Structures are given as structure tokens and as C-alpha cells.
Image 1 (tube, rainbow, N blue to C red):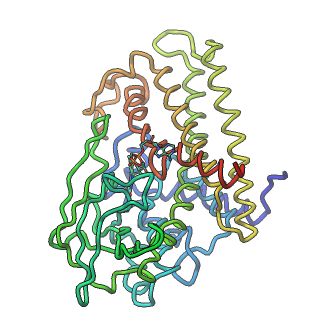
Image 2 (image 1 turned 135 degrees about the vertical axis):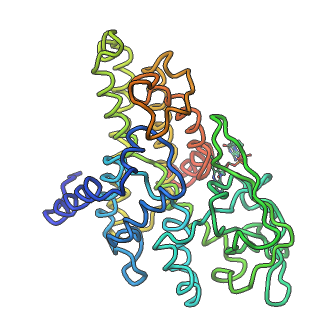
Image 3 (image 1 turned 90 degrees about the horizontal axis):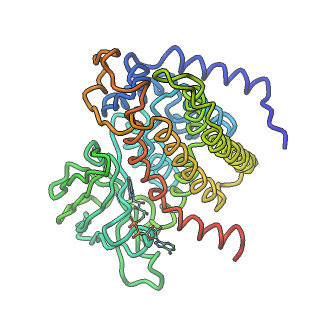
Length: 400
Ligand SMILES: Cc1cc2nc3c(=O)[nH]c(=O)nc-3n(C[C@H](O)[C@H](O)[C@H](O)COP(=O)(O)OP(=O)(O)OC[C@H]3O[C@@H](n4cnc5c(N)ncnc54)[C@H](O)[C@@H]3O)c2cc1C
């Protein structure tokens, strides 16, 4: 397989590289470098900068204000964004509900929702999983009962990422139980988080962060015009979105960037000790991850070639998802190993922009290694657990 970009694609790469080098909003690059957690407003500022450049709709067709980029351009954009250590685009609006609305929504919905999604004026979250419905999503129980010109929604969604920052939530809800298959009778509903009867309860994850939530719906009235597409077809719309989500969670470019950092860290003597690069066992593990990552990159490029030829991402996206997240977690482990005892202290105060560098505990982001390690245990669970992805690969790719 030849992997070469055309002259136009190389020029585009230069353009993207220059944007991330020169036009990232003030403070964000510094926060990223120091590992300072980003606030809601930071993500919005970053996405608005992309909007100003005309790049917020990186995944969208031109007719809805998107870039109309080819799959190769999208790939280059993703790689450069990771290589610049940029924050990454929060997927729920631009990557998920936007494409569902412009593909399946009514003319009124497109007019009402798409401009605000594109400009990051409205924060969206994803309401699929429920306390009793994760892997087996079709068993979801949140109900939306039609009552004249509105639905009445009752139920609980869980693990809702950044739901506490969200203005709107897109949900899979059951609108009918009189169905032959459980996947039927599920609909795709857009719900204003300010609606009476919506409550948000935090879930604190193992590293102490508030990132996910439970969202409760207690007789929430939702106008019928907020139903996307046809009633009962939500499963079909939701599946399209999940295949895109899985391709996006592979994170090959980001893992590659982090591996580069790890290699640099290993090449330096730290606290007067020999550089880790002299530890053959550590370097063997690092090289093994690098080799696997390279192989995954080629799988990603093969998927890209298929998409460039007009095919939708298929079940191969499951390979990207489980292998990509396994490698993310392997790199997390190597960072913890590299930090040694310095991975143990938790010093939240030092993750502030004005914290004096000379008073920091550890070199670079050493004390963050465990936080990242624990946080990213999620990667093999979200977007459909890795065990489920392996089932999909066994059935639809290997034909077992
Ligand atoms: C940090 C985080 C963020 C998330 N964000 C969101 C979000 O924003 N919106 C949203 O809707 N959801 C979100 N999720 C939910 C996520 O999609 C689910 O957690 C996931 O689908 C797994 O479902 P579950 O947690 O109910 O586990 P279960 O389905 O109960 O699975 C438990 C275990 O059993 C295994 N298992 C289940 N069925 C099978 C099978 N058939 N074969 C083999 N193994 C099986 C699973 O792999 C897993 O290890 C998030 C999850 C996490 C952890």
C-alpha cells in the first residue's frame, strides 16, 4: 500500500499545522502543555476558533456550513490536531448529533439546530446508556409517551459524559413496546436540559473527577417536533452514529504523540538517574507498543481508503476501537512505570497556570500519570465495550 499525499494535500497539511501553531486561543496551549484541566469555556473557545477559521464542521458537507473535506483531509486534520496537543473536539454536537440531524432531520430541525452546533453555542450530551442497558442497549427503558403535541419522557440515562455542562441531550427512547424486535419502537429525541423534570446527578470516577452523570427524566414534556426522523427508527440513526464514534475513539494520532513524548522522556536522565532508555526491558515494551500502533495506523489508513472510495465505515471500525483503546491503555501503563514513585502523589494545586514551575512535584507531568491511567480505564468501556467490539469483529469481519 502506498501512503503518499498529493501536493494539494501536503499544502493543506502545512495550512493546518500553521493554524494549530499560531492560532490556538491564548492560554489553551499553555494549559495543555502543563496538564491543567480544561474548563467548559476552554473547549468552547477552541471550537469557536475552529468555527472562525471555517473548520468547525470538519466532518460536515458544505451545504450545512461544513468543510466538505475529503476523508484524507479529515485524517490530516486529526493527525495535526493531535500532534499539536490541541484539546480535541467534543464529539457530542459536531461529531454526533449534528450529522444525525443533517442526515435524518426535518428542514425545520436543520435550520433550528445546526447553526448553533456549528458555532458551539450549545453544548450537547449523549443519552443512550441506562442503568440496565449498556452493551444490551436495545433493552433501554426510558419511555416517551405521546400526549397530543408532546411526548412525556420518564426514565434514567447514565454515564452521560459532561451532561452537567450540557444545554441539550439527544436520547434514544422507547416510543412503542408493540414491536416484533426490541430494536424497533426506539426513537431519537432531542431534549432541552432546562425542561422541568430533568435532573443531573454526578458520578465521580475512580481518579476523583466529575466527568460523567446520571440524568433523570420525571414527566418531562418534549414537543413532538423534537423527534428526529421517523418514530421507531432511532436504532438505525443511533447505529450510524456509533460507527463514526468507534472510528473516532481509536485515537491513533494522539497515542502516537504521547509515545513520542514518552520516548523523549525516556532519553533524558531524571533526578540524576540513568535515562530509562538504558533499561532494555522498558524499551522493549515501548517498542512493542510502537509496532502495534504502526500496524493499527495502517488499518486506519485502509479504512480511510474505503471511506474515500465512498463506503461508510463498517464493522472494521470495531477493530480500530478495541485495538486503539488497548494501545492507549498500554501507553498509560508505561507512563506510570516511567514515573515510578512520582506517579503516586496527587497534587491538584499544581495543575493551575500560575503554579510556580520550580515548586512542582515531579518532572513534567509525572504526577498525572496515575490520574490519566485511572481515567482512561474508561476507554475500553465507552463507545461500546471492547468485549462487544470483539463479538462484532468475530461475527461480521471473521464470519464466525
Ligand atoms: C467514562 C464513560 C463515559 C461514558 N459516556 C457515555 C455517554 O456520554 N453517553 C452514553 O450513552 N453512554 C456513555 N457511556 C456508557 C458506555 O457506552 C457503557 O458503559 C458501555 O456500553 C457498557 O455498558 P455497561 O456499563 O452497562 O456494562 P454492561 O453492558 O453491563 O457490561 C458489563 C461487562 O460485561 C461485558 N459484556 C456485556 N455483554 C457481553 C457480551 N454479549 N459478550 C461479552 N461480554 C459482554 C462488557 O464488556 C463489560 O465488561 C460511558 C461509559 C463510561 C465508562
